[in-house]
Image (cartoon, rainbow, N blue to C red; front, side):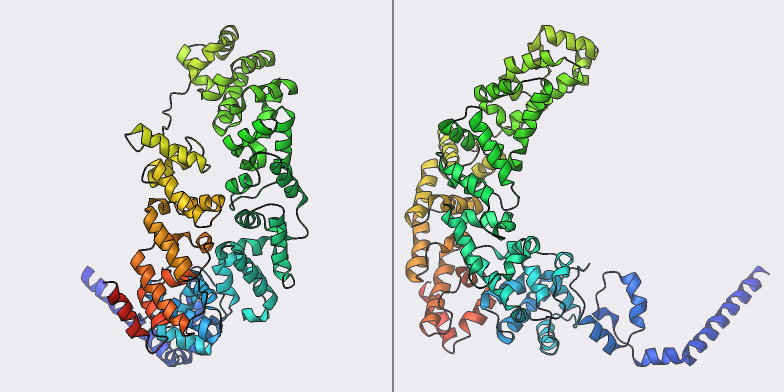
Length: 592
């Protein structure tokens, strides 16, 4: 009985499916969709569940027309490496040969616009063998909005540059003023990946007349700042280039000129990832001068504790001053504390002092007793990190009021509540203490802070004795680079000092004597010194041969010559001349 009932239900369900299929077959909409069916796998969607239904209603021609106008977006599926490389080459060829972009511009845009590249790949077949050909064909008949990959290559995300996209322009050449100012920043030495932030925060500078932007950059150099410092300044605070020279910054520079540290100190500790308030920095320096830190002492203080002024534009200093004043200390008493204990202005001491104040306030100690403890034991307070008041009460099995009375009678009992948290210790990498101390002394001369995380990391990266590191450093200075510039290069590419002096000299000789390039090229491309000598010799020799026959640009960037892969180098530096392949083989054979 039950079996018959199940059979009837199955038979009824099959009849319903049959009627539904007949209805679909006779429907004019389905016939239209079948006649104009297309493959949805060619289109990438950021919100698939919301877009599939709308896409099914569009024919292929409508979808292609719409997709050519899609803005750059992030895509869920990553692009395979092979596909990405082929797409980058196709985009480079389009920008360089079809649109007449310079080699450097085309290469940078094609390699640094991954979101735009994903959008392009979504419009062609995903067959790895035909990606280059398919994308070349697509670009031939579908011109792109060049502002999208351009802004993305400057370090902006799609959602950041979308408001900046011009509505009636597609080609960068249509906005010649903006593109000229962009090149002015590049030629000055500002990294392309950081220009996006400048465009976002100070678009006015990209509308300047020809030569005006370069003159503003030179004006800051005329204050006494080095080129590397000016680059850091304008990338961290692009608004400095709007209007005239910033008066507050100029005052800070004048103040530093009167000290032993000089303007070089500013460039050494600037970070292009932060924004600075120059008025507060100036006020901090002037305040330190008022409390008794005159020229020599102030210079020593700035060298030892640069974060006092630079970190947060002196904010921590003002916070500490305010906390001490609020705790009951008078202004002249705080001045005396700063003069007698300059180390209290270091980051670690500031944190410990604030913890001690919080501890004493939490147990409700009166301000006159807090003042007495601070004045008598500031050195100990700055060197110890205290436990929480509750932990101290539990360890003594007393209430907070009783703990307060104990500390009034015996203030030194406060330092029995030092935190038991294991402190990080910077262990010397070498068992030989002399070698370790020499290396540490060398790093201190470069401006590293003693026992800082940065110094611990540097000690692990640098190999060799302190005198060997100094010898390699001096080799770069003797080549014609400024001491501060070399310091900055080493901070960005510390592995340079792991090379022997002879290798460094050979590579500098190849750059300056063989190619005839200025030594300042190392500032933009310090990684040059890390490349294998054979690779440098092969590629420079091939480039020189092409340059002698006017088959290559006369002053092409060393990074363009060295960083490209072997296949790309052969394509653009060997096969561009009929005799190129034979010369390339002879160059490689001569060195074996």
